[in-house]
Length: 431
Length: 193
Image 1 (cartoon, rainbow over the protein chains, first blue to last red):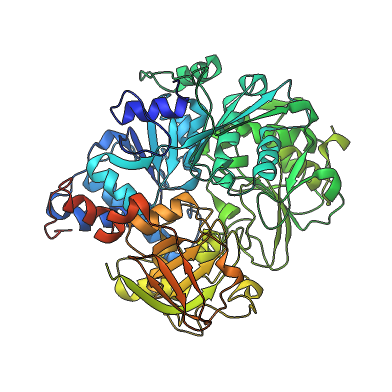
Image 2: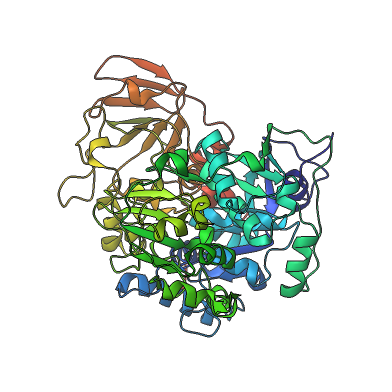
């Protein structure tokens, strides 16, 4: 019987000819990624558990991006970055992207792509739930906790239960008023926040093949919001073209067999999907933008691994250009590369950055910022009974700071249309 | 592994995500310094809106006042417990607050792994939604060998799901203990760090 792309990659990493869903297997890890929140406890567990014999299994395969709590006066948060800096210096780690240095990148999942770590066919494990983002490059990527990461740090290995795969097929041309965010919010509404628990979510179809890498990343990024173990898209010419710019490392492209067995297959006619939101307080609380339009807002937010890539800001700038925002609008580019690209990407003779600034948006340096609330002085953090529309990934109570706030999740087009209107607005009204 | 866990129930609803278990702003404390690590106990479940805390009535904080340990040691919840981020601080915070076990209809994968591999709390699956039939404060007794649950307060009893393939890791007390027991990694010597 055939295998899915996820099963093929796990079989290779488990040194097996084949694997079946439900089997527990040990995998060899190709890349381990961590950041400032989970890195310090991971290192501590590794030091405690391996004791004098503690050795990093492969320094080249360890990647550390401080990104969560960077631009804060919180002394405990700053101490975490110091711990990582000392660890990187002590072990002469080649892949540490330090705060304040020219190497500083920002949000780890976008940085992994930009720095060429997302190699098709590999196994990438990270101490962050949105590690599933990297699956957009046809690799197996998933999030783990500190103990599992510490175990990998010392052994290069992890146990996993081979997941069943769910396939989501989108056919047709993407209308100009939709982005990948609308598609994944639609899926979440259809299958709910535990609809893919312990399963792989594989995205396919002509709509996906026509998407650029950043949009594919948005789809895979929110697989975790359905409980998915990983999100995955087969690598193709678009993937290869992106990678040629970033890395000369060899990789293997895997594809699902025709006769592979799926838990379920869902087919979508992309053009029939409407601009979509997740209403408070769950990413699966789906509705159309039309049904909640004119909801009064106090804040708009564009940023994070989900909605803070160049594609997201270009999409937003197309709507914001020549207008003024009616509510405070917070812009956080995910990485320093995205920040630079905002200045260099032109729409109608103006840079994206200038368009956003002229409209009255506030722009902060790259980090996770208010996507997950963060310390009290975090840029864009929700306060009291804020009503926020955001391109981020979660809206459970308190996620962006205040437990009393209402957070709507939406595409950068919908957030931009809402920002210049002061109320939730369908992007079709402004495009 | 102790085979009998006894304690008072703290009942929660569905989709209790990691930001409700331990809000992200608190993830900055040391898990190594014994005094500082107590903050994780103090802030455990502090992100749950008060109306949803301690069902069916609600309005029951898991931790009262300045305390770092809870009166409740068994958490009973509906589906998808621990969804959201990968932060291991979540099951760790519950352990620091004195929680021994969780009984939920289902779990998010990373939380479940973290609870088991870190040896923090025992995540047990129920066959029916016990958040509808157990009340906060009920005295519960779990037998981990027979997977039998008794509600001593109400006299009712249920059969819980077996731990299955993770049982050896739970019994060992975590993934490192399991790996040492099975010879995957050598016994630890004290660290110099």
